[in-house]
Image 1: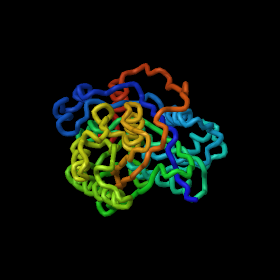
Image 2 (image 1 turned 180 degrees about the horizontal axis):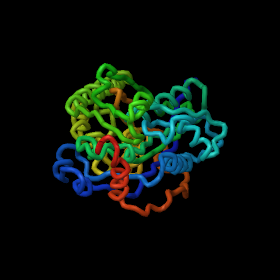
Image 3 (image 1 turned 60 degrees about the vertical axis):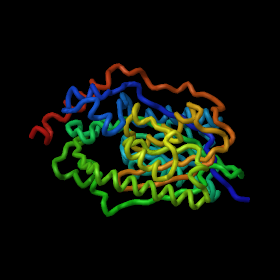
Image 4 (image 1 turned 180 degrees about the vertical axis):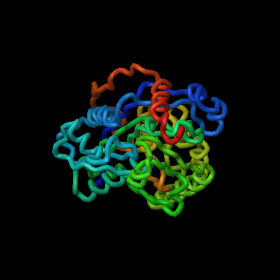
Amino acid sequence: MAQFATLTGWGKCMPPAVLSNADIATFLDTDDEWIRTRTGIHERRISHVSLGDMAEVASRRALACAGLAARDLDLIVFGTCSMDEQVPNMASGLQARLGASAAGAMDINTACTSFLYGLTTASAMIKAGTVKSALVIGGELISPMMDWTNRNVAVLFGDGCAAAVLQATDREEGVLADRLGCYGEVRGILQVHGMGLNYANRGWPLGDTDWVFEGQEIFKRAAVGMSRACEAVLTARGLAAGDIHLVVPHQANLRIIEAVVKRAGIPMERCFVNIQRYGNMSSATVPVALVEALEAGRVAPGSNLLLTGFGAGLTWSAHVLRWGERVTPLGMSDAELPPCTRTALEMVRGYIAVKQGSRYSA
């Protein structure tokens, strides 16, 4: 009998501090209208805690939603490109925090598509019978490594995290088709200088980054890659645009979302958008949007979802996901972040101050 991997639990963790477009205009030559008209972003979140802290809260909420104990997890897949530390990995730290001692633990870094690549990985392992249950996280703590002097990127990104629980089932649910790809030959159009061993011996201060972001070329490649991936997964399942009940895309730029949905022949009213509140949270965008779509009653039992994204690399992907019977949590977790005592603007100005005396002022 065929085995599938259905999504049974979901949870998000959004830091409370909000950085508005007006806040950014206090230290960059920009304004609210310039940002909104080019990106669709009104505000984003700045975290006062570590990525591990956010991931623990999101994961406990997802496990409670699924009615699954952490000790019963077989696998943890942590998707991120902004890990608290690389060795050991983020997934092992989360395993220890949750008490999921029976779970294997791995990180995946495909930038903004990390959660989606993780969804494929965990689903494939469940379908193969390697594991019975998995926790997949998409989370980012981007604000400390942001180049806050670069208007082209500083207005785009925010912090956040969400998690999903997958469990084996004999019902035809979960990821039914997926397509992963990468335009590796143009990987330099979206690149963060200052992260990795290439920079260790160049006198580059830790956390001091220089972002390469070729917006027009990224737009073109992202729209084409996501559209081709969407076409491939719909074809693989024999589905037409009218068979998709909701699109949950990567939230990087409203214009990109509109272009991809239009190419797929799906009306925008069947697309979930929350970029205005959070900006681009990299690997967290799709899972946070999925959680909020469920909270808003936009996901019905048995509905077909189309998930798609792109990220640095330049990676791209799409997934057809058939939802199961349950759209409400089995339980709730009391996990919460500690209180935030600083404003988002205060935290960002702190990051800027730390970099004073670095190569920016050398």
